[in-house]
Image 1 (cartoon, each protein chain N blue to C red):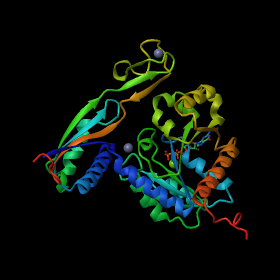
Image 2 (cartoon, rainbow over the protein chains, first blue to last red):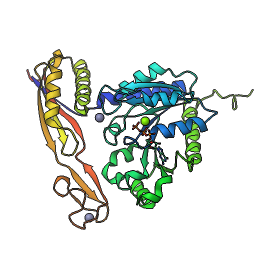
Image 3 (tube, helix red, strand yellow):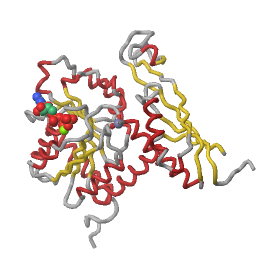
Image 4 (cartoon, rainbow over the protein chains, first blue to last red):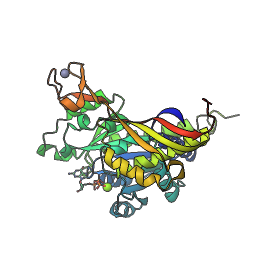
Length: 232
Length: 121
Ligand SMILES: Nc1nc2c(ncn2[C@@H]2O[C@H](COP(=O)(O)OP(=O)(O)OP(=O)(O)O)[C@@H](O)[C@H]2O)c(=O)[nH]1
Ligand SMILES: [Mg+2]
Ligand SMILES: [Zn+2]
Ligand SMILES: [Zn+2]
């Protein structure tokens, strides 16, 4: 017997799967977005709103759930392409499961592809899914102390959406204090207060998503392709 | 079912290492598990023992779990303190603006294995 020192995270194999999926998504030109939050924060409601608002974009959704199919049905009813992923009891999506779901849905004729992760503030943040962007929802009723309790997800997110702002009058959620806590954990995170119910604040978020897609494709086609600089 | 997911990833990482190093058998796996990683070590061992029975490379692999201490940083007084003892409130200045520095990780420290280039002999 010999001893081999590894020092690798147990999820090292996941990181390799995630890199491979990200590369494939880049080639396909589809921006994969990992959407995370606690159970019931409003992920499916937000996605429904985005599908209605982002009319010029072709949006696909992968709904990860431990067992039910209600979320995928809600999305399909809006005319978007959706697939339900049953995680078989697993409390998070990993890159391998995400790649299988992407395979099942197909990436053709899509611009944005959302992964609605399992509702859970802890372990989804520990697994790179292979997404180009990760965003999380924190709803007003959950409280402004969540960045202190679940720092990892706030650190891993490119954007934090503070949602259900229409309920602010009923809760003691201090938005400024919450922003400060998020900024200390993750200064580069964009913060968007929205209500998926009234539509308040959605525009800024939608602008950010469009810009993220442009960037994703720009990086992919950074070389000639466009024809602008290629005039003879 | 978080623990079973970790076991699957662990096995995959070990398979890849075994292929690289041409290992034929793994005798033990030592993990360093953070105190507040949320991993239930008893449950983890049960999952491991269930899984290794159906995985030839890991059939005899004993799991050794070492605990890594959790340390929290206080944003108000900028000191660090042991998380498990004091929780989220800083024991020096009683601020609640605190962040976990380490203690959330799960790392494969080392494995004992047979096969490949036995360097000692
Ligand atoms: N007032 C208000 N309610 C909202 C808002 N967004 C979602 N809700 C409500 O919150 C509840 C949960 O919303 P969902 O969209 O199903 O939440 P989810 O995160 O997809 O839930 P899971 O998939 O079960 O984790 C529903 O009753 C929604 O109507 C909002 O902006 N304002
Ligand atoms: Mg949902
Ligand atoms: Zn999990
Ligand atoms: Zn302090």
